[in-house]
Amino acid sequence: MKSQSYLTKEFDIQNDFERFDAKNDIFNRALWDEKVKPKDFFTSYDIANYKPKKSKGFDHWDYALRNASWHMTDVVGELKFETEGRVEGFTDYYSINRPGSKNKVSISSSTETSMRLKKAAVTLGAGSAGICSIDERWIYSHQFSRKNGESRPMDLPKSLKFALVFTMPMNYQLGQTFPAALSGTATGDGYARCLNTANALAQFITNLGYEAVASMNDTGLNIPMAIEAGLGEYGRHGLLITPKFGPNVRIAKVFTDLPLEIDAPVDFGVKQFCNVCRKCADACPVKAIPQGDPESKPPNFSSLKGIKKWTVNAEKCFKFWVGMNTDCAICIRVCPYNKDYSKWWNRIGLKLAGGPLRSVMIWLDRVLKYGERKKPEKWWRESIK
Ligand code: SF4
Ligand code: SF4
Image (cartoon, rainbow, N blue to C red; front, side, top):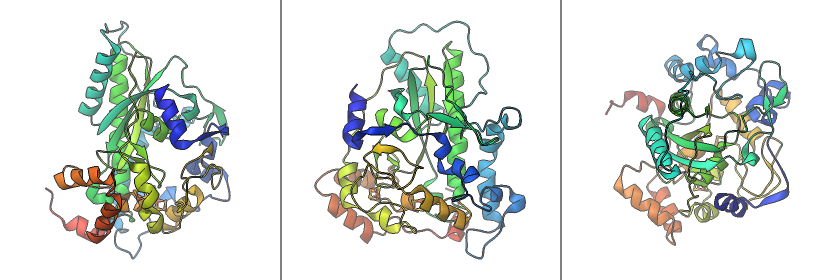
């Protein structure tokens, strides 16, 4: 299949490749592995436990807004935690769909159906949408229960053959304030909007009489699926880089048995750009992003094995988050692809970055001071446009 050979070419998948076990995800390891277990990190997401810091961006207002942005995601995601141990959206896919139509809608062609589905995705809030077939390599080998600390078999129904993958742009202005507790509002808000769009889309498909499962960070790896679905390319910082929003996106998906037409991966020169740009690696405070060439041996078992690519050291990265008491996205903030593409000059810059002038674009990015941190207090003072 075309998309799979693209990934094989880009990532050089080796014979010792193994599917990823969700138990080894750094956020799940934080619950069972003493090496990375934080004393208090998750606790600050309950406002009763937040600890203000002297630095700007970490006061009561900042934590209150960040935690509020996570509110709906947490409440909906934990509806079945006590009874079934599920954390939907993070360790388990969503199961909140109402029963749909008993009759299957009539379908004229998979091309038309795919177009309608993508239109629905964008109408329901997505920034961009694409379709790939479900490749088992990107589905976790096991799920993980945060309630009892045990792995359980992957239970994604085999009848689901396609994934409608979508991006959700995060707030650009807030993203400029990373790192701060305030900045985490961009993350929480991105997840909340993914939750809404993914579940509305799953309900839409269910209403058409087909099966659909809404999923966020659970069940499988979003980035390879997004690449196969033609939503962007892979960057040195281990994130998806999209032509519409750069790396400033969250990703979610809906698995379905609706007959769809898959998209082709895109190539707008990101790999060649990352080969000469190391802005994220230079800016990372804990040097978690590789400066060198892609490698197949990951820094630790919290990343995929047997696939030659740039891999962020998840242990170092998470340790920094714990120290900061909030999430970090400095690597997104400084990335030259992180621009407001509603501006025509940034769209021209994107085109130039994909060609022989890429080194000039890297120089310009530095000279024009793109990616510099905005002070959190400045963000609070700015008027609403
Ligand atoms: S999130 Fe922060 S600590 Fe983690 S890789 Fe990016 S810059 Fe480094
Ligand atoms: S900062 Fe530069 S090297 Fe890092 S992902 Fe963005 S373009 Fe690639």
